[in-house]
Amino acid sequence: MLLKCYSAALQGIHAELVTIEMHALAGADFALVGLPDNAVRESRDRIRAAMLVNGYKPPVKRLTINMAPADLKKEGGSYDLPLAAGLLQVAEAIHGDRLTEYMLAGELSLDGTLQPIRGALPIALCAKEHGLRGLILPAANAREAAVVEDIEVIAAETLPDVVRFLNGMQDIPPVRLSEEDMQSMTEQNEDADFSDIRGQQNVRRAMEVAAAGGHNMLMAGPPGAGKSMLAKRLPTILPPLTKEEALETTKIHSVAGLLAPGQALMTRRPFRSPHHTVTEVALIGGGTNPRPGEISLAHNGVLFLDEVPEYKRSTLEVLRQPLEDRKITVARNKQTVEYPASFMLVAAMNPCPCGHYGDPTHPCTCTPAQIHRYKSKISGPLLDRIDIQCEVQAVPYDLLRSQEPGEPSENIRRRVVAARQTQHQRFLGTGIHCNAQMSTRQVRRYCIVDTAGDNLIRIAMERFGLSARAYDRILKVARTIADLEGSETISVTHLTEAIAYRSLDRDTWGE
Image (cartoon, rainbow, N blue to C red; front, top):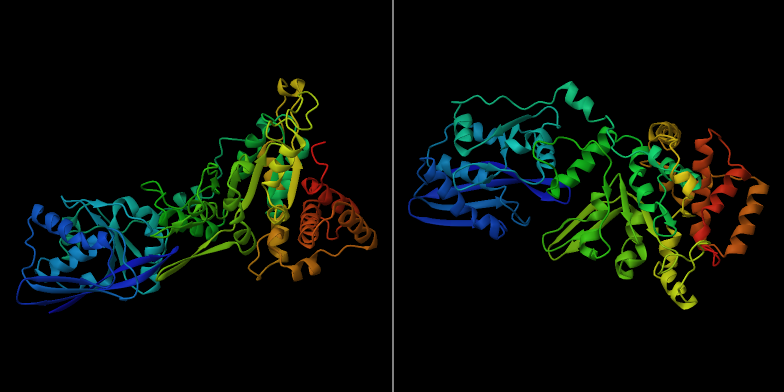
């Protein structure tokens, strides 16, 4: 007797079809092959207990179970359900061909209850890609999988529910998302707002430019100046997630197991703020069983590094390649996975260890050597990759006590969205979504400056000792400033503002 059923294995943020083949002969033996890990091997005991508790007799056969393809590692408890269904068909508790029409995924409790799994969305996409009728999975993951159209998503609570459904004895209607559900996914519902900010007009402007062009940003200023407060409000002025961005972002968080039970698509751009003790693996992803790191969890959103000099320098340096390539490839023995990492880096730091270098109201207690070492914790190559660098000053008391609200996020977002729409039309069909992602060739094409602008950049390059990468960054930021003003050309005014955003490249910053 040879039987088949289907499941999926997660590879990065994608899923690969796994065909589970069962060959049964007379006897009493059990062999599970196809690179299963310990969690998959242990499924035999979980499945046996779940079957006995629910009144099913495990088959007494000489079983060989192959999980193909044999060179793809199988991990986790999501194979409990397809393995149990296959064994029940061997035991003739499941009849007919319905089992081969659906992909199955789910972890079993000892009482037969289905537990949530990771990666329901990419598994549903895999089922659709391979022409299967639908997907049977735990009810907690059903809304997430139901985002995929033209496929039946069957939400089951227990193993007996699955058996009755496959035997045609119980009708489980496919889970579908209504138009209201889909509409609610695009609505913005932010608790924080830029209207809470008092003063800081220069930083607010810098954040608007950063949001409009997708630029990385570094803020330097004394403690209590509002750097963290400003950073946490940046997502409120970013454009809403498109359906494609929401799908990709949700896939990453699904694979990482971070989606709440019953959640469908993610509705907000991610904001990740890892502690300065974060390890390199936790930041970029990987591990024995590779998982997305913080930079991938921030995909299509913001990665905020507060007190950035407190991070290990080696940890910061691993950001250089993802900032350029907008993806990270994790290579492990017998396995290589790739995670997207297109995020906005926003970092904050004090100007010195005590935090008061350059503060007119608080004397700095640091020595020049201490200040130099503190600044040097951020390497030149990493600083080069940060388009916008600005100083944050302490807010005067009169502004703090003011009852007049600042400009709300909604107004700023409208300008940002308009600038992004201009960029969308400019880069249509190129795979680029914003000015910060332009290649060198595209910078030469879309960031043309006149003679006066060229002379201005030359003076800035010579005076501040800027690198060739900084030159491209200035042009990209100037292009964004022009887009915010609806200008097709880059003027000297746009370039002047863009050059001002390289303040931390100078040896005299903070004075």
